[in-house]
Each structure stands twice: as structure tokens, then as C-alpha cells.
Length: 305
Image (cartoon, rainbow, N blue to C red; front, top):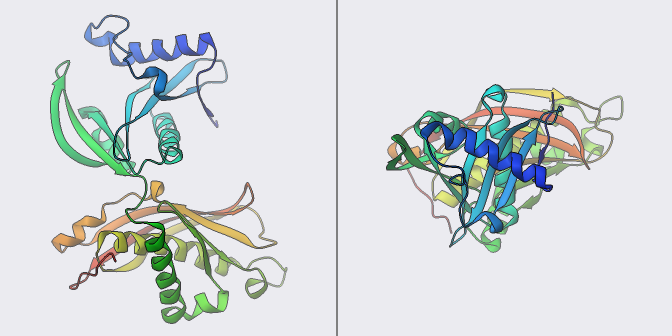
């Protein structure tokens, strides 16, 4: 079943929203009603998921901090709805809101039973926090956008495109081009004409190459932002071809979808990163690629510039 993330609007929405917060996050520890709210409610972004029968299944909140940070709080999933990915769905919507606000990084205070949940979604462990209601908590963070300015992004993309065309001849033949990079979203395009098959749609091999190189490119850009160097290889991948590509289409990947910490390269370790790359035509999803990349450490670091 597909679920839709919405914001509370009606009086009943708000009643149900706070009630689920209370039932999951406060009532089991004997806290009074009202303790599930704070002074930031009016200035925060709120998201929720309902079932088809109207039952509220999951909620979460985001508010802005200083210096480009946002904070997630009050993530709660109804007991009957756990294990269905609804928490991840709400969290993704809050992350997108953080980007819309111009936030670069996101923080949250995770309960010990949720550490692995957040790690799987790309969050890094930070400092341990004082227990709340006897439950261990830990700060966790995630970067929503790479550090750097527009001039750096432009320079990095020019270097990336040149690297592709000089070292991977297929990319030049495909006429692979970077069309957008804003620190989070990398979009690439290869025109249909040099990539057609006998059916006058895009050759499946070109689609696979386009999506692979787009994912590879996001990792390369992360290395530039971190001032690191490494050899990026695709370890394994799967792809779904959902519809024929009959005109120029756009491959895109977001930093939000990158799971795996690259900074371990500084300790001489191989690192892995999971990425999801999508091929779209307008709002239509034409293909979806899930790749696991490995980055091997290099001996020379490069400047972020």
C-alpha cells in the first residue's frame, strides 16, 4: 500500500497528531498530557501519515536552529504500524522541508532503540546525551547539502564532466552532461539521439551507464567537498526499467539518498555508500537504480578548493 505524507490542517488532525505523540513518547513513562508539546510548535513543520481508514500511523516535527541547522523531534509511529517504513517516509519529508528552508545540516536526539534506524538512513552518531525518562539518548546528525558555494559547485562539476569524458570514452560518446548541482541534487542528461536502439527508444545499456555515472558523480563531488581522494567502483547494483525512454530524460540523485560515511577514508579504510538514482521525464519515473559503491583510499589528499 502506498502512503501519503501530509501536514495536519483540521482540528481533528491536530488532536490526533498530538495524541499519537503522547501515546508513544510520553504516556508509557507516566508523563502528563501536554508534555508532548513545547514552545516551538507554531514555528515548526509537522508531518503525518494516515491509513486509508483514517487511523493516524506516524508523525514527526522539524524546527530551525541557528547557522543552517534544523532539528527533528517527536518522531512517533503507532505500534500497529511499525516495520512498514512509515518512520522513514515521515523523516524524508522533514528532510526535504529542511532543504526548502535552506538548512545544510540536520540533528536529532535518538533513543537507544532507534540508533540503527537512523544510521540506516544516513545519520552519523554524535555525542551521548543525558538519559530521558531513564532511556539512553544520542545526538545524530546528517548533512543535507555539501559544504561549498555556487562557484565551487560549478568548478567541481566542470572537472567531473571532464574526468568522465577523458577517462570513460563511453560517456563522451553518450554526450553525458551535468545539468544541475546545488549541493544536494545532482542531475545529468544524455540526449536520446546517440543512445537510441532499433526501437527508437533509449538503449538499456545507455540508461544503466547514465544512472551509474550519475551515482558515481555524486560520490566524486562529496570527496571534493571533504578534501579527499579515492578510487570509486560500483560493487553491485540493481535497476528497474519502468517505461521506455522516448525523448531526452533526466537522471538525478540526492545527497539525502546517500547512505555511508566517506570520512573513514582518512583512516585508510575502504568505505561503502548506497545510492538511489532515478531517471525521470517530467513527473514520470522511467527507471530506478540502486547501487552499492566502494571507495578505496588514496595516498594523496586534494584540496576542496
